Amino acid sequence: MKLPSMIKGWINTSSSPEKLLNKYIETGDKTCLSLLVEQFNKPLFHYLLSMSDRSLAEDVVQTTWLKVLKLQHLPLTHQNVKGWLYTIARNTLFDELKRMKRWQWQSLDEITEVMEWNPLINKNAERLVQFNQALEQLPFFQREAFIFQQDGFSVSEIAQITNESFETVKSRLRYARKHLKQALGNNHE
Image (cartoon, rainbow, N blue to C red; front, side, top):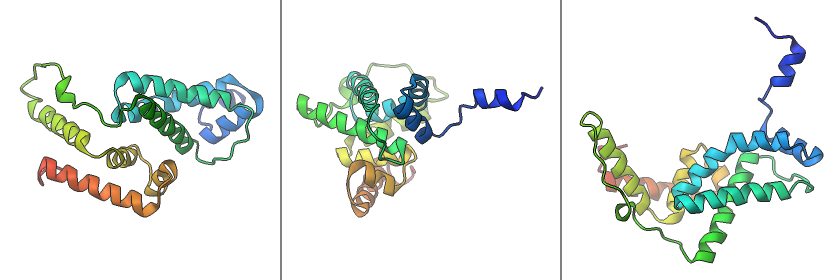
């Protein structure tokens, strides 16, 4: 069954994030903001969770959206909405970490619950635990760059988000990969 083209336009949610944000800023249309939240809330939360604990990640992602909400009447100067949102989230996280004087996090070993593993997935689960532990051991900025790259950002975009040079980001990524390989052994990629 084909939909009339007029109806297709009504239900087309493939608008770019930039168009959605511009429309929200111009008109105050909360539907546009809702679509942005729907598209970016989980990835932002995942990034924040990988850099902090669950409670702080929840607070920071909420604060990030409140900041976006307050920016309604400001002109949009960023062409990459995803990068702009991650920059807001990152800066908000830094502010909270400074306020709480918490730059390093407790190891998950200290708070991990004892779990029973299914023997069929035991090996993969062990690898995942080893990887997560190795990731936790990375210095904050190396871990951040690595996580951004895993979230699909290019080196240039990471440099823009973190306000660092391209070469600094490349170096952080290189050291992160080196440390992960050392921690996991050369047989894990």
